[in-house]
Image (cartoon, rainbow, N blue to C red):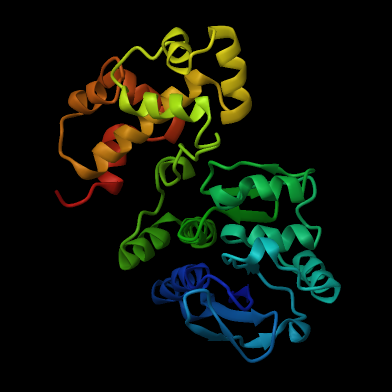
Length: 321
């Protein structure tokens, strides 16, 4: 049985959001009998050539107004400006109806915003690029946005995280259709993992600055980063800020949006990530220099925060040093 996979594109779309999933299903056809081949289709929000965010140009197979079939899988791609784009009620109505006809539907990266504006995420559990998760939660408050998932399945709805997570989702759907062996064969062809460990936190910086640069809290943040091997107790930090411990905890949480203890742990994780990526230092050395009690403590924190061990993180991200 042939299955049709359609991806919706628009001016400014992220090229890899389109080509990644398309390549998974195109490569799958190498290993499938002709009667089981995927048929791939690109649907355009506009007619004619559309420039991607990286300057490449895509031409859709058809305009959305001409796409009335029931797709086996209908995906919407994302793009850097998509959270701020509105394609109008005519398109939103088509997308609602197309999702209703499709056997499965979903989004790549922040394509979830397109689904949200069409009203098809209401009450669902979803994910998107970690950097857009907060905005999506505000746009669609009835949805549960899980910011640390590579992809989420909720009934017929499938949403994925940033960019390359669209490949993870596509491999998962391929395995559901034709088995793990076929997905593994495609993953080998594309030189990617069939199932990556951990969630999006591996790829996102924890230490997004919140405090005003000249505030006492910002000064304490800098103090933490310069003294990771110290105890960094509330008393230490309050002293660095010239505040009482009680007042410091309240002010820090208000301005930094996290507790002092949370910030310290995030800072240590980020410092360890840098060392794991850029050096071959033993794990116990990384743990010591980043302020963890020992390598086991660092492993525990990495598992809790990133879903991977320090060794797995190094294997995934280490430079050739």
